[in-house]
Length: 297
Image (cartoon, rainbow, N blue to C red; front, side):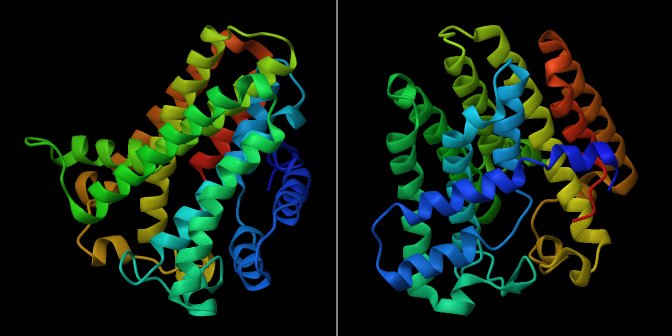
């Protein structure tokens, strides 16, 4: 990892502490708390809270101001992974190099732990976000979560609008399934950062962050699809080639690897251009996009 990439992940230690604190401050049965901790605190890139952190920095605020949003969005992401892994969904037995939660603690506990994390996300916002913007943040998180669920339905159960196929179908699926929560993370970080500076109307800044997030959300999924084809399970820590084996639409399957790579390059350039109105403060977000474009896990 290059020095700039390492600098981008410096906030992860603070994010991890905030996640641990968020779980410790709520009343839960011990075995439910242990199940949530197994999934929530079990590693991961922490991409979404990192995006929230650097979005706050991009609007001129301390990264720490983003933490209520970053924690909430990571709780939703963790919930989604637990439920996606269930036998009724993707039926996975490996996540981040260890057994998935339903393999570790049983299906009933996995369902309930996912439910708990979804609820805890909103509870955390209510407890930790500035009172004046809790409603705005709740709306952003709800929109992102609903979009993510809709995308999972399109991907798993179908139901796309008539006449949508090929690349348009992929975009519809993944702008929801992956992109919606990434957009929420960037916007929530921006909203919290602006609020910490006493700025109530940050329309232009939020528009720039939204355009950036839309591009990297789609780019992230294309790279994910290529990793699923090109990398072994020993490297990724999860089962690979599962989407193509299940007959799902993937970017390499529709476009081929070479065209998929060119689309990654296009989206990377577009995402970086979207940040121009924010100036040098948005440089970490631009660097993060570049790192995401070449990731291998």
